[in-house]
Figure 1: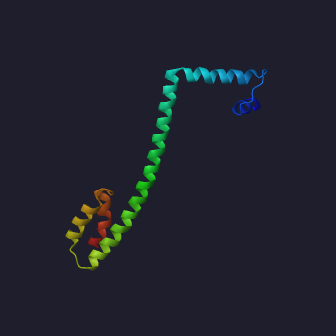
Figure 2: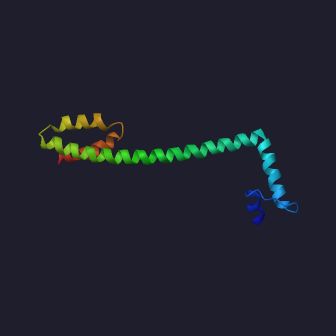
Figure 3: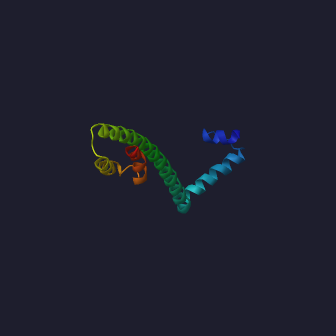
Length: 113
């Protein structure tokens, strides 16, 4: 293991067979265009996965904010005497890009109570 760490630090000795073999393998790897392409493709996929995870986190936050706004807007419009159908129609217009129709209807169910 120490030989590997020495190689990482650029410390090579003439009697260090393991480090020499490892270094030769790395050089061979970097000279093979197909292997380099595979590694780049793998890196791209890892970056894509990371980006998707980040986007999912942002979407979850947006969705939670939208749910809070939806609930408070429903209550406010109801208190103002707006008809259930007008509230229902407006909420579907405003939130359909973030919430499914079923989710919106779930929060609008309070209108029917």
